Length: 361
Image 1 (cartoon, rainbow, N blue to C red):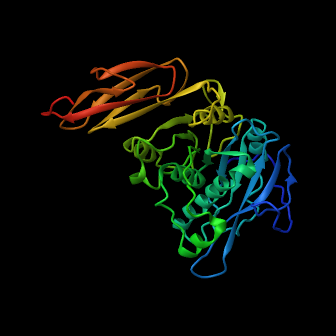
Image 2 (image 1 turned 90 degrees about the horizontal axis):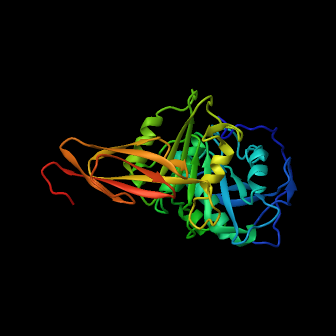
Image 3 (image 1 turned 45 degrees about the vertical axis):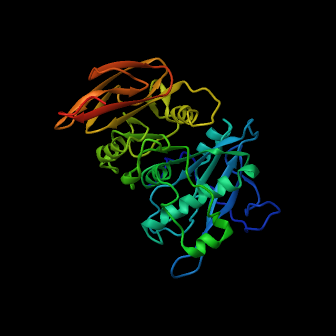
């Protein structure tokens, strides 16, 4: 399935890769059906157990001007490539997103991954793309602390994986570590992730300090299932996430798709990205990060966990079997199981549950 629904035809560019005077190995800059200039760069190199090495590529679109402090970067990971040849032109065809994001000051990159070396190698590939951008942040005009992942379906799953795993996951083999193209030793963590939708491949890696995730799914999506399980994994791991089931949407989203609060998919993405650490732009939205300490759950209404500032939200603490609710901590205090708060800025609240015979902490 395609990663994000494409509104323009793919434009295939055939050129020879050359070594430029810069630190980035790339093709000459080209212009697509967008005002943004782009480069097709080699962002890593795979060394499979059998067969020839494979140079990994990524198309990087740059804004016309770099904002003070550097641009935020968004790395798109395409959907399931199945057994298609690599890269097969999958680095192209996202000019609508390139135009939308670069005109707002973002660097936008499309990283191409494949399944030819098996499922486990995919995380190695996408982490190499993040390391490439971070290692070459100065050349691209990127703030290295503001890199986000973005994908749909299989690509959305890898976007989430980049948000919840550290560098002990997706470790390259010894030959890959030794190749300077892979920038081993540079962090591959992202500061935000967008999955529309995606799976949680590493639930045991989830915790409260992971990067925030914007999670969406069309109510008419007939291709992606088990969303409840994936949301359960994010909730159980205390991951900061926002959740939007979208009416009249299927497996893919276009930039103008209406999501919530009168905002389109593109607008929700940009407002969400403004919340990432180090971003000095003010967002119209604020995030409510709900955590659980002990055995129990929390009902959140409205369900989204990402709201226009000033939204009143109701929380209901539900103790698990043999436990009782012991109170709220963090940005909410008190002992009432059902309570409300106004979200005027991003907040973190924790519901504490203790064994029924225990003492209130």
